[in-house]
Length: 160
Image 1 (tube, helix red, strand yellow):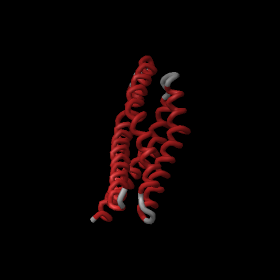
Image 2 (cartoon, one colour):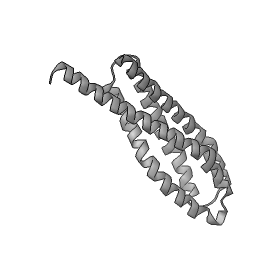
Image 3 (cartoon, helix red, strand yellow):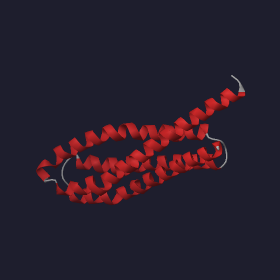
Image 4 (cartoon, one colour):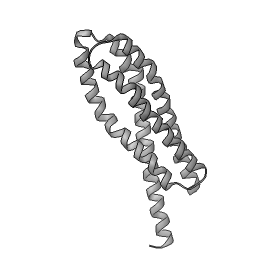
């Protein structure tokens, strides 16, 4: 492969990775906004008798969305470090991966156990804790989306 063809192939990989990172992060930033501002606060409004069924219904459906987007976001963050040039862009890619890692840790250590408790029944204290603690993920995902935008803009600028 000639130097020009290799460069174009590398640029194509880079833009695909950056677009996957941006789309998955922007989608998750929107999902978490809806969850934080509408869905989790509405949990308190569901009657205790219907709560377990409602929570199971919600968990299955949101799982279809985040079960695709979160792994794509993680893979794109890892690949960004590999395909981007050293310097500011690589630093931003590491920041993006750090944000994704923090999201996964908070999800696994805080939200998943809380949802486990809620799957057993209505508990207003757990719901309140879920809403309060989820602000961390809300801001992490907003930050990840912003970093993804910065990465794509930086990549476009170095192409000009």
